[in-house]
Image (cartoon, rainbow, N blue to C red; front, side, top):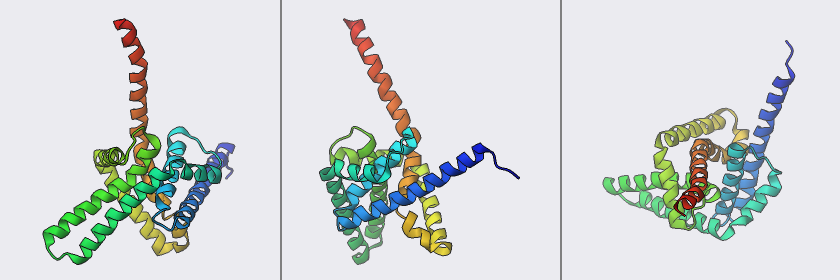
Length: 217
């Protein structure tokens, strides 16, 4: 059985995407570690979100290493601040879960943890792909996107969890190569149609505004 040129091209494209995901995962890990974890996770997550958004929504695949490192420095203060806020809240919730005995307080902290995970999953894509500025607005936008796509958020979380369990069970060597990028990949796929529709609505509104102003004039 012979493969056509299109089949080889498709296979090559999929393999290229697979290796690009591995490289992005390694870059995210390296930048996070260089920032001693807490200071590095924000810039690394912002750079990863921006690259995946450009790749899946616009088909852009610029040189991976150079682009990632440039994006990690692009909004350094804001991304570090976001990482510190999320990490600080996560520490508080974790301490509460370990120290509290009352079931209703533990339930409230479990709910807070779920909200924090949704915000953490979406907020760096909000920073990278929207015009929202300021931590409160970006956090609110991330929560709105996550809750608005809650069914896809749950499906994506289950798919990521299943994939990582399978890797840990049958292919442990793949976990350090793909473990960090998979949640970002799921969010990028979830937000692809949402952000595309949002961009289109903004373009339509921008195009109609001069016409309205001219008509009123």
